[in-house]
Length: 428
Image 1 (cartoon, helix red, strand yellow):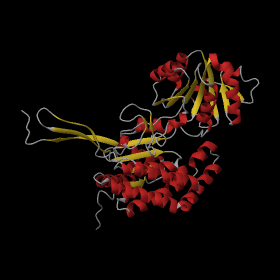
Image 2 (spheres, one colour):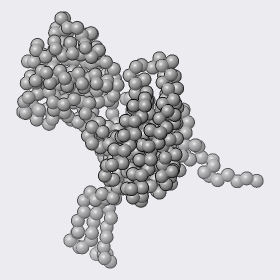
Image 3 (tube, rainbow, N blue to C red):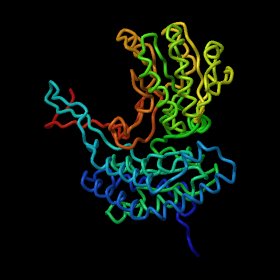
Image 4 (cartoon, one colour):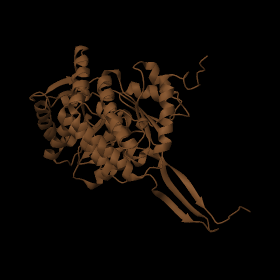
């Protein structure tokens, strides 16, 4: 008679989590050079096996187009040889970054002679639940490995072929470099039940990070028993102040909206001070038209659109709360900087807001009053990105205020512990 072990009776998701927990314990003490060698092996493998990856991705893209998926989501899903090379370059960048593990956050010798140090340590097992962004598969694996964490990856069914190919390449490279291959795993299954199992794996998974639309994030935050780092949607604003340089403001607006509209740091709302509207809006509307952007305008913006080349439609209440992820933008004229701030406070998702102004006083007031993860002065919202901030690839952009906020790089994938060293000390 064959006796099954408790492990054999577990679901595939639970088994994967146990393997990840064991791998995390092996990863935690590894020196930087070992982890970096594994990352470089991953980067090389991605380039060598680009054709395999792109062919798998093409099957996902074909299914998405057949299902009528919008252009913005298809763009997020698509991998080209150039994008694979860029992803490999990001992995090499992560390898070149300082290792946060073991960093002393603070330390001192206490009056009683005890040596006290607070040091960074890996979180353990990180679960990532994300939508049709196969680049996240590699970014998450690289950042988690560098910071000594095992990672469980649960991408969307729409990217299943792409993610399967990428994880296969990564695991082969990691195993060949001497790290436990189970440090990087694709969560088994394509059903929603596998997602729910991951969300309930408290004690095996140390933290979950959702990346995707508002519905996905809300579901993970409200239904998970595993601690969650909330990454929010990007309803980002560009405010053009009364003292803005018009040429600069047009360039920043168009770049923020149209450089890549399908990402969370693209601008979704334009706010214009009434004192500059007559000079700025005709030029801005034409520039947006040239970029193919449809403007969802309030009545005051509509008044400046009569002679414009822009496609302009009346804004509804829903437009102020919309993350378009497309060539659309909401636009309004406001009476003052404080009115712009009030609008942002009401409708923003807390991601990124930008002000264009030559007034230091206005810039200072805007940055003090706006409570988002990133506030840009005379710069595009598109810079809110771990790579652009010099963090290497990011694990996500946190819009919460506990543990991590803004683009999350390597330090945000660590916790800390205290090391207390004495010489026979006892408490009296």
